[in-house]
Length: 170
Image 1 (tube, rainbow, N blue to C red):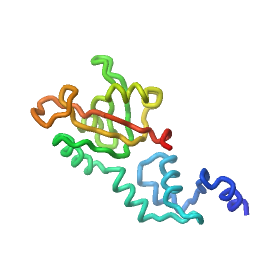
Image 2: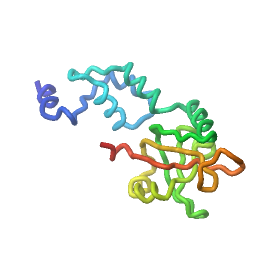
Image 3: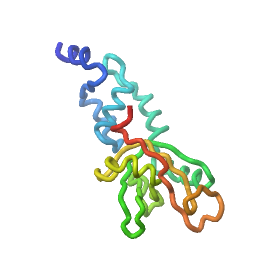
Image 4: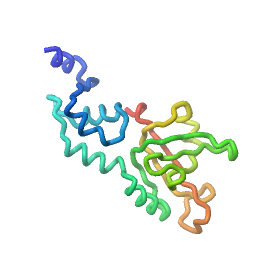
């Protein structure tokens, strides 16, 4: 059978599409390459998906809007948080800073935005600034005037300390 031959030759690269599977992923609001990656990660050799494991993975690494409120609390109390998210990055010509927003958490207006650390912007500029949005593993902390702080929060910035865009993850 052709399907078996494709699986045999391209085992590490092939994701066989299944219309029944699409229903499960349709409400996740993630790009197709993320869905394909989840299918490959949580499928057995016969293509059967462990939906329970997918659900646990999503709950742990792809936070909901409500989860982000908890992350903000952790950040203002000195913690650094890391998760998988959709990110938009641009350059603010008024300040000269590279800024980001997380649209799935309300963007900058909803408190889900801030300044990208210079070294991160420098390293990933060709990816982050050429595309309107990216998915990646983000590392965020709350910083006061460029330094992490729990004290005096009259001026805040969330700082994107690191990002690993998914397309470049090995």
